Length: 65
Image (cartoon, rainbow, N blue to C red; front, side, top):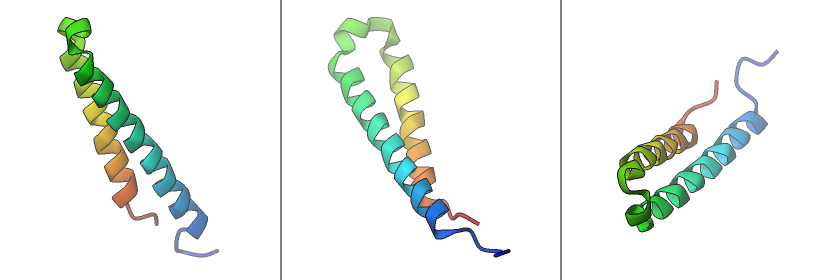
């Protein structure tokens, strides 16, 4: 067995990271543009969107072993 991670796993991880990052960016855009409708929940949904953005960046930059 190989000790290094497979090439396919690395590509899949980065692709999934891009998808999560895109979802995070879209959700923060819609959260900020509809802040007057969300009222008290704007901060909550903004926080969740930031978590998705950070998770996407971590998945893109992570090194598969």
